[in-house]
Image (tube, rainbow, N blue to C red; front, side, top):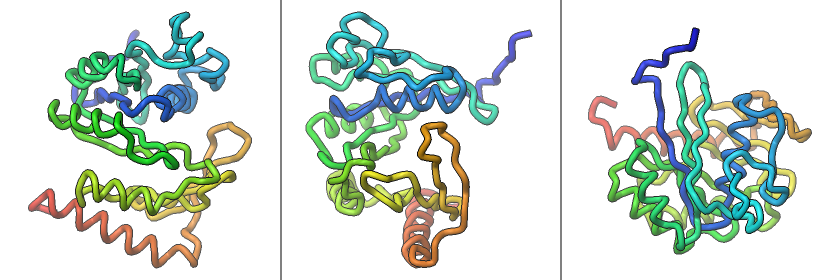
Length: 225
């Protein structure tokens, strides 16, 4: 018998960004982690789930919005992978009309780009919640702290980290989760498996400060908190 998911357990999410930041790769990673696929496809190989059209495979970019869905911790997630190039902004606007949350991807090296500001504005016009996902933190030139400052200056002080990347750069695989206050470390074998550990002593003060900032930001938006 097919599982029935109640409405309150359904989440509709759109991945939006400037072109080439990595939305399709993130969508593929989510599909792999949740068991939708047992192999991690690559845009360069034309083997991703969401870029399936021959033109997308040939050009190595998304042209239309693709829908992926999966179950995660009792919730059904409907994930829309949207194009990032300006020729296809109509697809982005349409996707934002049918979701509650926009995940705005930002390149850890390039930072805020023209497309970033466009999709942020579109999400604001649609009245959806916004989550910023910093991608490419494994690039040797990635600078997380400077990017956060840039994001706050551009989009406001409500931008606060929920995760703190620990070893930004070529070997990036660890971050501090400011909700659970644990270090999350992923295996480097590409299996997607992760472990949780205590926060290293040399990161404890910074994690406490970031956690306090996160709590204060949440309290400012909710009188009960």
